[in-house]
Length: 328
Ligand code: FCA
Image (cartoon, rainbow, N blue to C red):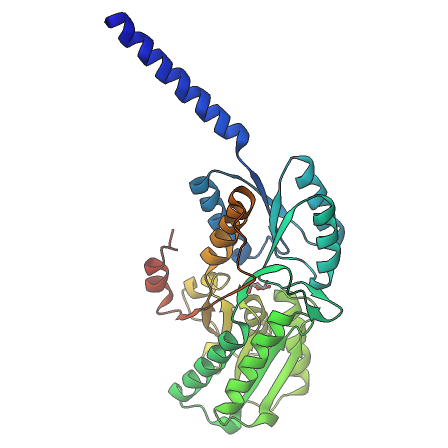
């Protein structure tokens, strides 16, 4: 009897060992390539994708793909180690066809996240995509900025609007068009709304673009600044500070709600007023999970998923972060 019991235990233990080593070896590998790994937004996407990997049991390979050659090399490397698919926020939407060609050659599945692939100036609708409801989110930024302008009792005639634009990118253009339209819809004079083009979609790009605008427009006491994301608004706020416009005279509104937390945590408020907090969890966790289900169960992801956002400010972000399980 005792002998039998020990034999049973031994078999159970062996079985456990065997099955766990088997599953480790058989865990599918999934790549997650991002264009700007230094942005907190992309770090959060990765973090949530990692959570999906732990829960579902796959290996997530996080790769920085800052330009075309790096992305194509990353796809080849992923194929070499046996990955069957990847999620990507491409550094350039025009790389879409080249990425798809390489993925096809390597027999890999692709989900585009955040930035949609373009071919001959049109979105590649045949590539699975998860992105934000860009225009609506932009509109909300415009509405919130105008609301705050009214709260502060600023005179319209003394206020300029600076919209930092990055028109090469569809999702960016939709966002800034939404911002512009909402501000115009609120009755704000069109000739006091200015676009400051970004050469690069980062803080220095927005800083430079806004500085150029500020050398041309010197007559305003107050400024509303907004753009495609937090980096755009932060760059513009820094340029404003350089010209003496501080928190009391600047309403900066961003998008992402992730790259602006350092602004909110500063002991004194800056001109960065608020941001549309997007769902990094859906962008990271959901896309990675969809890729897993596609590879393992053959379940195709939806063709086009759009996510929404919620407005946060220096006063509300902490509470909303806690509610969403984002606080550390
Ligand atoms: C783009 C932007 C990011 C983020 C994302 C949802 O990729 O560059 O900052 O806003 O869309």
